[in-house]
Image (cartoon, rainbow, N blue to C red; front, side):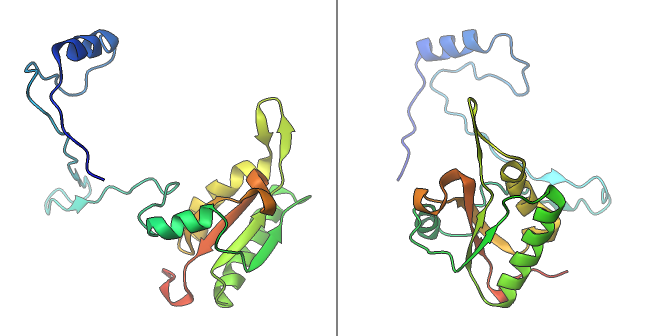
Length: 180
């Protein structure tokens, strides 16, 4: 889908300036109403190698992880069309035990050429929504250096597999895992 670029009207620009008048200005406002400005991403210059002016790439937010799998595969996983080949239940475990068993489970699944797994964290219903220590920490554990290289994508499971108390995790192929 292609987005259309349109010109900003004077009223819209005036309203935007009024809304953002107390904000800290990082860049500059455009004074011309017809001018279309596009923000360009500039690479960061590494402070370690100022002599070589090495350019450091900006890493994307790994919670999204959209760049690692295509849109079709992502939608299939989110809709539960890719069925998990193995399950891990973390009910009743402490955070240390849960993290250790998750790490071992993911590594053994990679060794057995399993691509999709289901991790059941459980949930605690509160007035503010579902809460649980393992449930909250699981996405953080998956982003950590130890497990990051093994995982392509993860998302909440569909209702029949545990809803928001479980997560689908799509693993890399055994030969595609990044080892150090």
